[in-house]
Length: 65
Image (tube, rainbow, N blue to C red; front, side, top):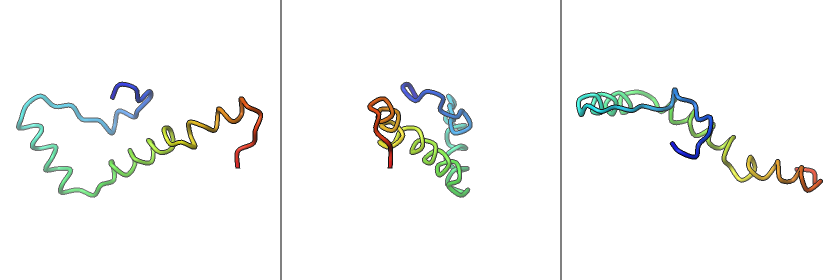
């Protein structure tokens, strides 16, 4: 997750034990992809071309349309 500043921790899961990893995978397969969808929306809002270039346009004095 290096390089993704302020990434919401509720979207992360870190496990060491193989049993815990297997449980996490099974849980994700059995439940809707809500967390993945929310994570994708966050990434698009913060790391899309538009999200990254809009501040640059304000520095250049151009309006964003």
